[in-house]
Image (tube, rainbow, N blue to C red; front, side, top):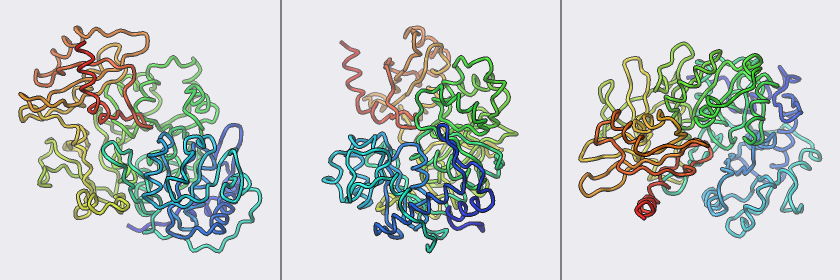
Length: 519
């Protein structure tokens, strides 16, 4: 496929020239035009050059949602360097691992996170930090982002990146072992943006809202780069709390494209919204990604929000990230939709042979959206990239219309006496029981069965769930071998930044839960 642009800066130039006075970003009570964004990006890029940053250098961005994040992202990319967004929920040792992995000498960081990285220079090769906000010290090694934008003259003599150059490195959440950096090229992301836009048909009149963390591939592609591609405005929200502010900004700024994770849609489907919400709400599409959307949530949400479609999609950091999404004109409950245009999906067995329609197997993906590979991980690349196909590690099936159904992560599969048990199936049933907010099912090693299902349950606030009643309900819905052997009620399930339950932590602590319950 031929692509119209080689890099994101070309899009920024186009928008600044053609719709320069149009608002690109809303943040708090400010409006920033495309012309202003370009000027700031040019200035920031020039500063990076003066600091000695070159094409191919890896520059980590440890910044919360802000205009500065966007400027840093585009400024780094303009000079051909590679931005590496850092999960702002990580601790110093976790951040140090990533900085050492990419051999970073520069770091762009929010001053609000300064206390999180007091020894970062001792633990890594970082020499200079550009601080967004108001850091405790400003000197030649601690540079003010604000001063950069006010003092440096921009210039234009840049050798722009090409389609095959690295656009970004996204580190996976590290649910198993150390995180790995997915290397995404401009071609990868352009392919994803084009495929998404072929389905949803975004226009310059659309407005997005970005409240999910910008460091995440879902937010970056769908809420920053897709609007750049279509010339659409973005409402930047600095923090998800209070959630009422997100609702308020959605109405005031006339947001038309609302993206979120299942936790958000679960909360919205239960929330008591003001009576005028549906009158002033302009959202035409709600998009769910980053984790599986329970069928119960989709059902509740669709009944409450009848003017717009909630489209569930599926993707991974390694695929830029969107692989599939339900169509506005056709949505199947429980499905993440067909693959986006330009992408092939197959369901295969352990020998990588395609299985018949409707049978379960591993989902593999092919197309321009598939990453170049993991940074510095040759062994991992050999395992997951085979003949142009990316092995996702997800178990799923495809129906006769090409709609994809995610059953589970391959590593989360429970095998009891040789029979496959898919935790998501059990979770979907549990979530339909009154009073249950969220749940996770994991496997526990067992001498007689190999593995047995164990359920961890989070109860709605001010609600009570009787375990005996729950077990009776499950027995009426599930085969005996699928019934959870143990049920544990927890205050909060461990989750990552996008609301995905960290089952690894539950498995690691399962013995503790068993011993505590036995007391």
